[in-house]
Length: 137
Image 1: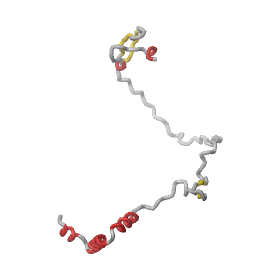
Image 2: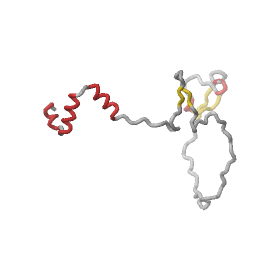
Image 3: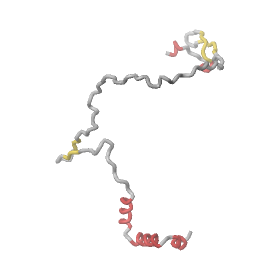
Image 4: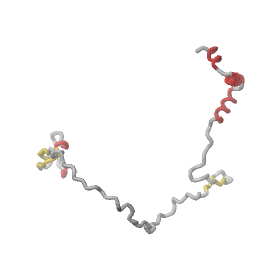
């Protein structure tokens, strides 16, 4: 798209804004556009931070109403009582699902360290040098 075609597609307001932007000082346009679209800063969740400035530029914070991290936790009495609501709902009786999975395959192996022979799940045995649970540690 050539520059002439681009300018022809602009409305009269857009052309005026383009001319103003090109004729103004570049630094002013950057500063205005920088602050024009920025969102306002929101306060913290627990309210505004209350700071006290001292003459030596150190800051002493006043505790807010949500500052309770130094208080110990104290247990209170449980006030919940069972009122028996929803007692009319019954769980339907059903039969158990039959087991269709076959028993795990076990392999007889001899411990390389102590010589003890035991049956172990075949998926856990690999390599030549098996060690029993006692010898592993």
